[in-house]
Length: 441
Image (cartoon, rainbow, N blue to C red; front, side):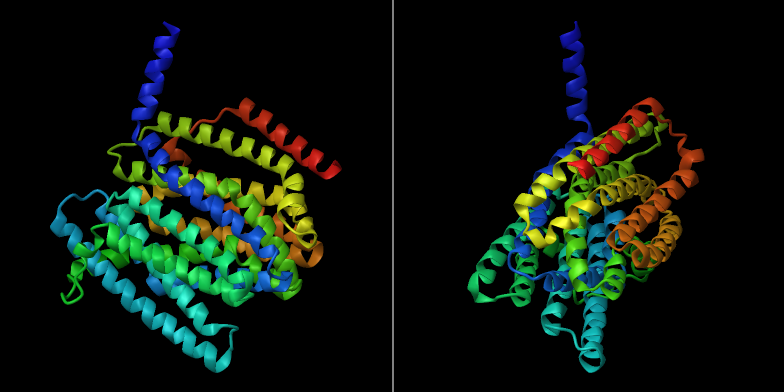
């Protein structure tokens, strides 16, 4: 009898669209994100701290610029085509979106390239331009492919990108293109091959039409949905990545290199949560009604998983860092626990953010993220001056915590979520003990 109940429960779980989505996304995400995680330890053996700090600065600058260049149109395309099965409607939306993305991205990136060449010379400026262009087109196409429900192609493109990036790094940095040039070329090559795969392996090219004027209503609809996401993305960038500039200005590029290692290590939680977030968004956007009991169950399970991971990674961080990075980066262990906590808050924020996407209330996404951005930037400037990188880590936790709490307060009346306080208290005790052990061994 008990075995039969367990079997039925397992079968129901495996049949769940949520579980299926997570399984599909995990196949690519775990492998590709794990490879991406390995990139920074590899770079510690080839780049000095200041060069690694500069690379991290460039990457975060690209993450800041691309939402402005693409107007987040791919998110609008994803939301518009996900519930639609009519091929003609899909083609009109996708061709309109791609035309807008290509036009705005080229115009804005070329303008930035010219301005930087004239007034703010950037090391390897043309390569940085190609990095930004490749990244913009890659993530835009991936989001559109995801809207077409071609999730296998989505994850395979991730795997190709990550595999090519690491292989190219090892090839170039071992004598062919030493230093930052090799890293930048590897990044460009990985994005180009990922884009090539998406164009060849999916039917996305059949939806493209470069010589047909887009329908005005499609243009208006895409901009109406996507534009509010731009300030949200910029605010989210302020919460998570503005620290790169603050650290560089106050403490220097070498300190930013150490922080980059700590941040990447803590992003293990982000890697795992990303799988959940993608599947959760797909399910909520396709859902016909809101089941608050089910939503509470998902949130509680997510919290349990995240908090267990924080404790385990905290305990493992010091021994692992001794093995995978050179000694000059070892002090990164001090900042990992706080950055892990920040990542938990980020994950909870994404859980609530999926509801806003489902409700097409993107303005609320921006407002709640803006609160966190203000807290993160102000506290980071003050605490980094006072406590160094430890202050920066505290500021990041405060910023993401503000977003998570604000979104919970804003949605609690509509969602009516319930928590298991005893379980959470036990897990928080486990985390405190893990941090205490980490600082004493």
